[in-house]
Length: 365
Image 1 (tube, rainbow, N blue to C red):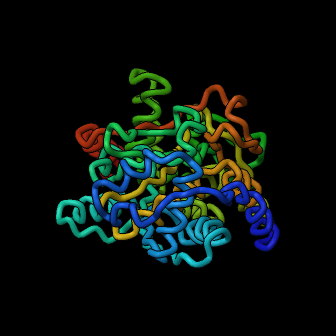
Image 2: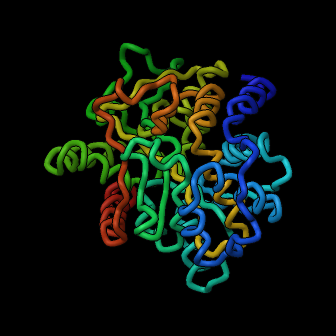
């Protein structure tokens, strides 16, 4: 979809955020940005009054800093969505890989020198960063399927999976015939694919997800067979997709559906199927505790989690699942009964799975 088209659609879609007159919220009573009282103050306001306060205070702040474990192209899309509604608020994006984001937000939180205001991460990393997150529940909180929301105001931290990336198996159609392409991970594990496949290097979440979906007795032997394929490992889904598009590998597995959808729409010789068992990576948005631009961060979270925004994202680029139950999307959750959303992993479990995957997929090669 052309940029002008979906930006126009978004402008109309987000009209629901515009506030009617007659509200008497007094922005001067709002606690200062970065204070511990901000989230409780905002959570205590009714939706119309809260949005008015957010607009007033965010306009005064005039900017926010977004820490994101996502590609620059994707961040640009989200920022343009926000600025379509609030052009006067500048968004500074700091691109970080997941381990870098974890280290940065935790280090800044401990030092009480928080440089970011908002974080986009993923569900499986939440246990490692939740201590640095703020307890803000946006007005959309109760609109989401319970599987898409994490933490809560009472717990002192929150996160919403504004989108879920279902995993696919994708292949080059000039090298792999459609009727020969694997449809399940068990078929990917066939030794005939050895040296021809690739996936991401973030295998802890995959391992935990397969154990949750299949049980440890089935999942671990399957992972052993997958590890024996001499996979080419990529640091991100974006680089995995690039590797497939450039012919570095013939087949990719555990790749978010949005990437092969985009490649195929651009005419690349790529096809794909939803992976079986189907795992989903939840991409989360959270405010950071102690940020200098708390109101702008909360406003960004409000905009990003609106059903109208998610519908516009879906129209702009498919291959995603959305949990705001007030929207209508290309792929409905009800059509995917076997979906397993990857869950948060405790630090201890993360380290344990990290040692396992390193031994199997890196040192075992």
